[in-house]
Structures are given as structure tokens and as C-alpha cells.
Length: 271
Image (cartoon, rainbow, N blue to C red; front, side):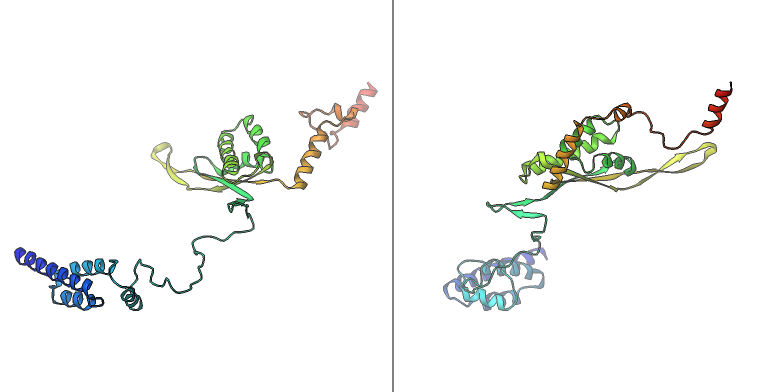
């Protein structure tokens, strides 16, 4: 049985090669030759005929009108079939159009107005990470990095790394000025993993290991924001009055009166 199949395969390949040779000599006769050979071949060997037919179709020796015939039949090829037709090129649907947050430079490169850096799978609660992200939200990048260096929180290192990556991405890849960047930070929930929490007397409960993701978006500050920042810097060197100098940052300013103050003062005066 195996020998019969091998002999049949050799015969089919011999007939196919002869058909291709005659088709190269006579333009237009390759279709009938290959179809007749593949039709007479056994059902188990027709796949070899189809592969050989595809190889013969893509050869450069086949004329253009034959490829046109294949195109009309609904068979796609890699050869340029309609080179003479004036077809207007269209943009790929996979390429997103330029949005409002993008501009084009003179060189043709896209300059983004907003650049982001994302860190996923942070093994910490989103509530704890958001406490640090809320601290630096709206700051300049330089001020935010300085603030995170002195912040005693475990999430401060993570937020520092993401802000540093966003600044490097904006400066090296998109040509933004690193000294004019404003920080926008967003914290989202990640995958919450459930674990066993062992209790007394052979009991157990469900313990949740939370994870989160941090997104940092940096953008260049506008002229109004730069003027506001300069105004705040000037106000730091403003001379304070005597009453303002007496107020210390670590002391609370009393708003409500003390309870029974008059009674204590009256008791002290009588004594």
C-alpha cells in the first residue's frame, strides 16, 4: 500500500513538472494542465498538487493577464495585480489618527503633549499607594521627586520610580522639556488574590492580598501655571508680621474657646 502511494506520488509530480514546462512555453495553458493533473490524482495526493499549483502561480514567468484572471476568480496573490490602476492610498485602520494631545514637528515626528508611564502588579493596597500619589499630584516633577525622597512610606519608592520613568520617556522619546513637567498620578485596583487565614480551634478564614496599578501622566505646564508657580516662589520670601512669625507649624491654631475658662479665671481672682 505504501509502495503504491509512493509510485502514485512520483507519477503525479512527473506529470505536474511536464505540465509546468509546457505552460512556460505556451502562455495561458498552465491552468488546464494543472487542473487535469490534480483531477486525475488520488484523493490523498491532491494536497501535493495544490501546493505545486500555488508555487506555479507565483512564478514570475506567468503573464500578467493570468494573475488578473486569478484575481477575478477571488484568489489573492502577493503580486501587484493592479499596478496600472490609479488607486488612492488609504490609511490603515490599525493606525490611530492624531488626537488633540499630539502635534507634528517639522521633521514629521509626533510630539505628544502628554506622556505616561504605567506600573502594574504592585503588591500593595491601592489605598496606601494613593496616599503617596495624592501627595505629589499637581506638583512639578522636580518638586515631586524631592518630596518623595523625604517621605517615610513604602509606596514612596514605587511612585518615585514611575515618575522618574515618565520624565525620561518625555525627555528622550518625545522631546518635552523636563523642567516644565507637571505630574498627574492615578491609582487603580489590580488582581486581588485570596489566601487562607488560619484561626484558632481549627478554623480558617479568607485573607485578601491586594494589588494595584499606578499610572503617571506628565505634561508641560502652561504659561498661567508657570506664572502661578513663580508667584508662590516669591511669596516664600515675603516678610511676615510679628503675629504670623509667632505661629509655629507644629502648633495647632485654636478655633473654639476653652471650656469653663471664665469660671477658672473667676476662681483664681477670688483666691
